[in-house]
Length: 383
Length: 81
Image 1 (cartoon, rainbow over the protein chains, first blue to last red):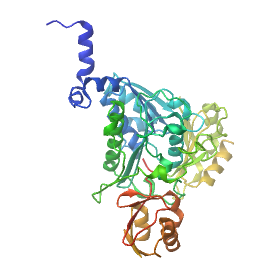
Image 2 (cartoon, rainbow over the protein chains, first blue to last red; image 1 turned 135 degrees about the vertical axis):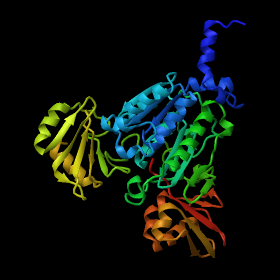
Image 3 (cartoon, rainbow over the protein chains, first blue to last red; image 1 turned 180 degrees about the vertical axis):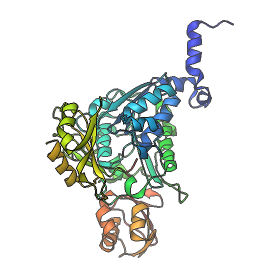
Image 4 (spheres, rainbow over the protein chains, first blue to last red; image 1 turned 90 degrees about the vertical axis):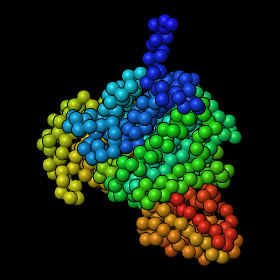
């Protein structure tokens, strides 16, 4: 038997997924659905890189990754897409992830966005996506992601990990509050919908009340379990296996050998949820949350200037490096300016570091105090 | 009535135990249990609106009435990633 050229190409295209196609609930049709799918991964840290790696290998046709940071040495213990060269060259995570994923699976289209996911760009990033996966490290941005998922009727897979613990659950927003017609290939009825993040956790933990990667550390194995659970949920959704998704909240402690599944089906009925019952998207509309955020595990603060909705600035990074040179050592590349202050010290005596992006966003490392960070920003960059 | 409270993550760490015994009036709700626990432990008071409360591994709203012998799990969200 002779195969046509196109048949050979199709066989080749699917060959690498053979072991996955063997799974009865996926098969060739499920694999083709994956190849036509678009997943948005917000956050390119430990969760985000493990999710991106798994979904690229599984053949999710388009991946968009949004992350604001550059790769650091302390990331390499658990953030699987990065290496020492990325650290040495200070490559932004979204770029480094895109480069690695292209070598893992050239069939997958990867969009790497070096950006701070915020109220002013959230709706642009969810356009045309089929599922949203959470690789974030703070609750404020998660509530924003929850808002945009509910408004646009998109599946959102929450995940979080710190220390040796982790947690994950799927949000299939109730259609009651859908304001935009999402084009997701995943479809579900009101009866199949699930509580949203704010139904289960109405408010973000207060500052200082939750451990961070900085205070508690983090074990890569705990993150891997949560990332794998998130990926399994996404693959079930994208291959049309809605009846197989886990509708419970998974909570694990890999060190204490504890695993708990919590039935959260009653969470939406119980409360007048501002997000998915009343449709009040305070985080998406910029009425909740601030522009100054501590970064988990970094001893750092991020400052995003200007009110949400304003036009982003375009800074001349070379000029800024020259301007700051009397105050320390600063260099720039195509993506950012970075340097250390000679006269600003952290609590342990190390020089405070500044990373500045063209849109005016800054990461100030060497403090977790928002006021100190604001002061440094105002002093050297200007509001 | 007597209830048992299971604590996880930072709650257990901060309080120094993974369970507490709680004495409540008959007919008390989860809301009242949280008020009582919050008066004894600062961290519970500060986190009461961010906790998921479960009885027998099932999420329960704060208005839920408790029964004698119930075991409540206080589950904080996990924020890192």
